[in-house]
Image (cartoon, rainbow, N blue to C red):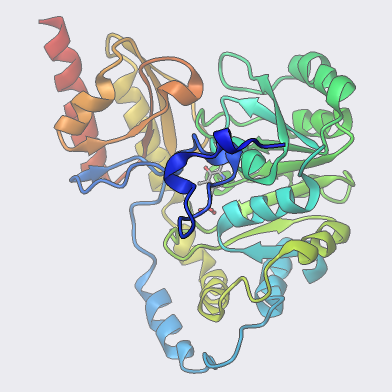
Length: 375
Ligand SMILES: *Cc1c(COP(=O)(O)O)cnc(C)c1O
């Protein structure tokens, strides 16, 4: 089918690397900029290191690992620890290198050519990427102006996508990224009942929300529900790369069909187990983080030319009138996330809650930039 003329010349000769797959030619590597600036508030990590007791205990137990041997392919001990915490069986739990890999495996197992996914906008920017790399068609439904999913949207826009395309999987971040909005479990239930496929509730930030906000409570009730979690945010272990899901046993069995053998290394498995043993110490910053988030929001709210959305997570979404705010903040050593194109509105920024000093630096830079405009 492909004529010789469509083969790029620089790749044509023998000995040249073959052309990348056609749908990837325009793709640029995904990821937030990693810049070496004083204040980095762009990827929603917790600014505090893991507890010191974690590193000493992990170091003590590393010696027991047989690193010349492959790791436990099914990460049984880690999954048992996670399952115990949730009151589930290990067969209902799966773990991988960050929840991004968990989500990729879900798309590899259930998505693919001829299949489609239901996404929401604004939403997590990795979801369209995962659809693309797995050849899954994405159908995107707009959320309400406050970033929330409502019963109305489920009954109209979601129902229309289901009627027209019957997506095999729906992905909803709750609290949502980048808005920080939290939806009630009765909306999650309505969404599950509206779709015929899997409903994946991505709870990357759930530890910041009120107890009882997690869709874990619906797992026994809703047969196509999957709850995904990560150690990267409230658990202060973004550098570890560990995520997991809670799901019907059938889903875990299906993921085993696509996972690479030994995908999760022995050190990560052990680190996850040790972290769970010290869960309270890992999560003891949550109130302080929420207080800092609310302090930031209160500091931003009265400023002219910028609006802040309510957030249940460790970040805030800002809508600024001026489109150059991201660059002006960066000039002052403050890196936030520019989500203007992702959200489809210039001046859309997401700021992660940092340490009190980082948050002060952000507020000072923001006020200086906004004041400079008014002069
Ligand atoms: C940060 C984030 C993740 C976490 O990804 P990891 O691969 O576990 O680091 C997943 N989903 C959402 C919505 C996120 O914001």
